[in-house]
Each structure stands twice: as C-alpha cells, then as structure tokens.
Image (tube, rainbow, N blue to C red):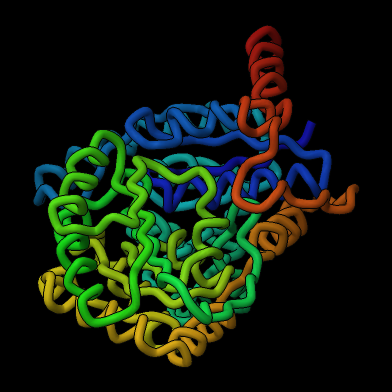
Length: 401
C-alpha cells in the first residue's frame, strides 16, 4: 500500500487545491492519500465528506496575537509534531505535500525528519508562513506566480498554477449584442460583508449610466435575506441572491464581469475560464496576500484591483459602469486572464509529485466530472477508498505493535 500525505488546511484556499491534487493522484496511479490537518479548519468537515482519511493535529495560529500567541503556538506545534511522527512511522508515506496553513508545519516536519521527500504547494503570490518556514527543506515547489520562485533555488520551482476542481476550463468570451450585462458577485464560501453592504448600492448607481444589469450575488450563509432586501430597496429587480453557488464554473462562464475577493483559488478559477474581474481584496488576509494576488493579475491586464478602503459606492459604480460600457476592454481582460490560467494544474502537480515519490503512473487520467460540479461519487463522499484503507492500515499497524 503506497501513501501520499497532504499536510495543512484551514481555509478553502489551502484545502480545495489539496483535494484537487488528491483526486488527480487517484486518476493517475494506485496510490492512497491521507490528509493531516486541524479540527479548527475547513478540512475537518470537507476532507471526510470527500472520502479521504484525515488525521487531526492540535495546532494553533502563531501570527496575529503578539509574542504570547507566537510562543504558545510554537509549543502546541512541537507537541503536534510528535504526534505526526507517530503517523509517519505507521504509514511510511512516499511523499508529503504541504498545502500551507498552520497545520502544515508539524506534519511536514515530521516527514522531513524521517526522510520523506517534501513538496510545497503555494497558490498565492507570496509565501505563507508555514510554507516559508518549510521552504529550505522542500524538494519541489508548485507555484502559481513567478514572484514566489525566488524562494527556491536549484530547479525546485514548478510553475504549474493552482490545482482546481473539474469544470474550470477555458471558455471563449463574446460580449452580448443586446440585453442586460451579466454581473457575478463572489465573496468566497462564507460571503463578504463589505461586498454585501456596498454592491447593491453601487450596482443600482452603475445601472443609471449603462445597459441594464443582471446580477447573481453569492452572499454567504444566513446573509442572503438582508442582501436581497438591500437590492429591492435600491430598485434592482433582476437579481438572484444565494448563500452559496454549487455551479461556480458555469456561473463564471455565463458572466460578463465578476466582482470578487482575491483568494488564490478564486483568482485561479476566474483565470482558468477567462473573464474580466474587479477584485476587492480582503484587507486582513495574512501578509496582505489577497491584494498581491489581485495586483499580480491586474498587472497582466486581466483584472482591476480596488482596495477595500477605496471600494465605496461611487468608486465601484464607476468601475462597473466603465467596464460594462467597453466591450472591447472586457474582451481583452478576459483574454489576458485566460492566458494566465492553468486548468491542468492539478494533473501537472500530481504527475510531478508521483515522480518525487518514485511512483510510476499506472492509469490514463480519467475525464473530469461535468463542468461546474463534483462527480456523483464525490458528492456523497465516495471519492475513493482511501479512508477505509487508512483505517485498515492503522488498525493493522496497531495490532502489530
């Protein structure tokens, strides 16, 4: 039984690329994947739902709370590393992939201490703390931006992009000859309160000076009622407000313009399909990485970046109206974003990771699931048998010991 360990998590920006690589690994080779993460992170719910085994490590953030939090976080991490060493001794993984987040460090370091080759997956345009600390030990670094390559010498860096779920492939863009302009608002899986508050007003204002606007707004769970009321108060009738979108790829492809936060996965998804975007980065993201993601794509001509402190009703209305009034510019932005997109990133990372692990691909990659969603097995948690095999392997190891 050959295992690959995926270490880290916390947010969707760490968890979903790791899951995309895990699915690609399963399509390419007879290999099992186990995740190591935190009970506080998104992985605690999402990874088991997708049918993968998850080892929980008690870790805490080390940033954002001054010296006291840093010291406490380091002590907790040291204890978690001891537990992770026991996991590595049981499984003897062929390789470990760090996807970042504060749960990545203990599991990855435990692997390195026992000679397991380490690869780093960094979707952002700046290295996160965990991956920055792990960089000296990495044999491979899978990156989405040229700017992060400077941290890795000796040919370790691979510019593969952000691994994405199936459905995010290039889609040609043609401006509508008539009818409303289609605007998609994405605040991330939890929504974004700042966007929820300002965009109903900004869109109503923009509609006064441009073609009619048709809006789809992902507001976040338990926030849709207030957002829907805000649109109604401003007289915006052609609007669909939802807590969450399951068919994000199709909604992006159907849009003329997207207003969104600038998490690495969101930027990568928009780039893979190829659509014009206005990014309003979350101002409190670690190391301001969302702003750096947005500015990196803006510099390539694929997006407009508006800092949250400048993203008032007037500024956003002006940007929306200007882009909806210029079909040629939106088309150029869509093309520029698509040129940066890397829709095959998950398979490219998986192939290289197998090479690092010394495992030869034994299968041709299966066709991806239909655009915009997970396969039927993935929806009900039956992605593969890794979870059951992990339990069996763990039990066997305990019986032997």
